[in-house]
Amino acid sequence: MKNTCNSPIFKSLALLSKKEREAILQEQCILEYYQTHIEKTVTKEVRALKLRNVILLEFAEKVSSFLDSIDVTHAFIKGIVLIEDLYPSLGDRFLSDIDVLIDEDDFEFAMSKLQGFHGFTAIRRGSWEGNNFKAELDFKLAYGRDFYVTLEIHRKLMWHTEAPFDYKIEKSKKAQSKLYTLDPTHHFFYLVYHYAFQHNCQKLYWLTDISLFYEAHNEEINWEEFERLVHRFQMTRCAGFVKKLSLKAFNISLDKVSFSTWLPFSRGFLLSDNQRGFYYLILKLFLKDRFFRDSVRYLGLWLRN
Image 1 (tube, rainbow, N blue to C red):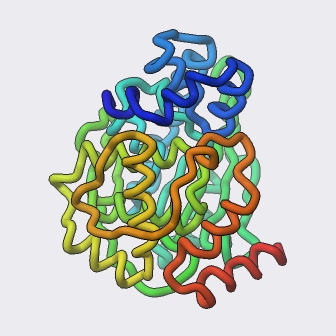
Image 2: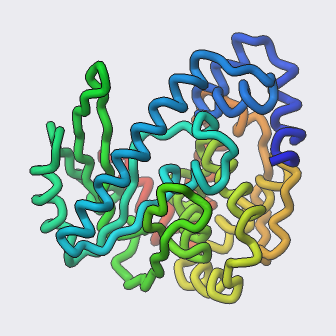
């Protein structure tokens, strides 16, 4: 955490005008983190985020108990489990929704049962290859006022392949909620995949997650297994680029990640409130090891949808 707070990326942000800085922080989903740990202030935004995250965690625990009661194996992924595991306060990490992974064999059964869960209002399914591996279920909860939660159900971890991935599940160890999650090796691999392969290194809070996860769990990660997965799913550039970004942005060296890449670092891209343009296109095309099979094919699918 100390390395992150004293990092080049936050020093660069401090040089901007307040208006510019807050626009970037808002877009990159790290406004509250910056306010708490850099500006050392507890703002109304931080208090509101903390309250929201308390409610989301409580809801996740209820969903987990419900899935247990119908014998559906599941694992919560990304922010909902990382917020207790990696961050000092529940007001430090923005959560847009709750992500949960359910085995494909149980996916439709779980979806049908969750539509009868308290507060359910709507369901949205992905319409193309880039998002048809998941569905979003909306819930309205009563906490003095209407409070809306989206539960994003994944039937697989990686959108671009149907290849089997025998992920391991465990109870979160540090978190009070004790939600089921992926084991550290598979979770770290997925965080790299999600940030770099799937989203082309957009959103600084996802890079923050990766850097803090490495600091917290690098001794628990099976690095031989991680390397095997990176090679198997053609993600050597992704892993190498995330390693470069973590060092350049946060002064956190992912020493045990053995990959590297020629792709150039751009602090301007990380600190943009509109991550589009030529550099984004370079990442979209060249972050993936297989140019035609993954990069060009995905670009075509994305443009059509």
